[in-house]
Amino acid sequence: MHADPRCVLTGTHFINGDAACCEGALAAGARFAAGYPITPSTEIVERFAARAPKVGGLFIQMEDELASSIALQGMVWAGQKSFTVTSGPGYSLMMEHIGFAAITETPCVFVDVQRGGPSTGLPTLPAQGDMMQARFGSHGDYLTIALCPNSPQECFDLTIKAFNLAEKFRVPVMFMMDECVGHMTEKVVIPAADQIEVQPRRHASKPPSEFKLFEPGPDLVPEMAHAGEGYKVYVTGLTHDKRGYPLMNPQSQRELVTRLFDKIRRAADELTIIEAEGLDDADVVVVSYGITSRVAQRAIQMARDKGLKVGKLRLICVWPFPEKVIRDLAPKVKALVVPELNMGQVVLEVERCASGQCRVISVPHPGGTVHKPAEILAAIERGAR
Image (tube, rainbow, N blue to C red; front, top):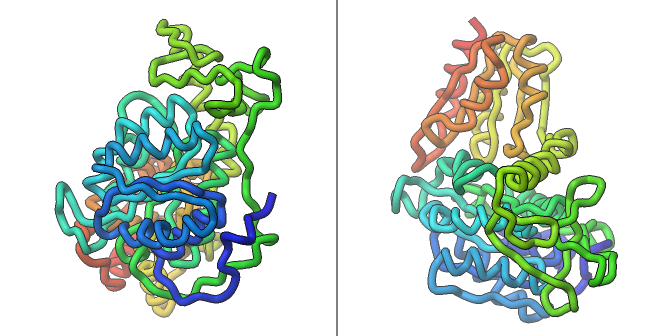
């Protein structure tokens, strides 16, 4: 199906990443957001609060991030596409409910505009320190999907993608922005509604007497029924059977958790979303994501100007991690250089997948600003030796 034309501001705009994210959510069909003000994400829901009532939507400012992260799930089960936005300290508070969304297979989007931490840290300055939290933040075993835009245009495009993936796989999707991308103002082109593909909700196709709330389809993803439609809707964070009723034993746990993993693992090729350039003859490849990929682009060009063979691998979908890409690439290059606005998080996955077949050079940065291209260039030169 296509986006609702009432909600799409078709045309060319000069807006920041936060505003573009809001417009992407509206185009994707989001009609509810819950949130609590926190820099540098607040502009997203400020805009949503102004725009949503005009298209039949609603924003509620909750008392805190815990309330926000469960309110949006209640609205999903009432039938609406929903999301919340936050930054590091609020994201930490949301972790229990992200686990709840994972086990109940609630399709929703968590937008994290990352800033410097830990704790209150640097509220107005950039970092990428929440990347491992996006994958392992809640307790237990589960998988999510995490997308990383590097421009306001991608904040629009990939927000739509985030909602589509949430609906397709019935998972919480993490939209991992950063302060630079959120506050960066650039041209954003919004296409006509009939050019925007929107994934509809997987609604129950069986009558209530035959329907089971967590009975998986051929792709291991269950259809969904909403409260008030005549179906038995039992939603619990306990390990449960196909009806949704608690069934707490090792066999039930194995069946449920394995399926939650396998529905994502089976889609590994579809969820390998990258931007690659110059990999075929590269001696060194720079692996980056988010705002750091834009700084890395300058470093790559500087290295090429010196005659070095350098490739670019930008991770757009970081979780699930593109393992096959790294495993195929590692034996062909001398080094993989991984700059991040943290002290080394995604680089650990790069090292794991490279399995010692090439050097992996971390270029850490604690945040507050971005790398200097010369810092990444120095690591490229070290890897090329």
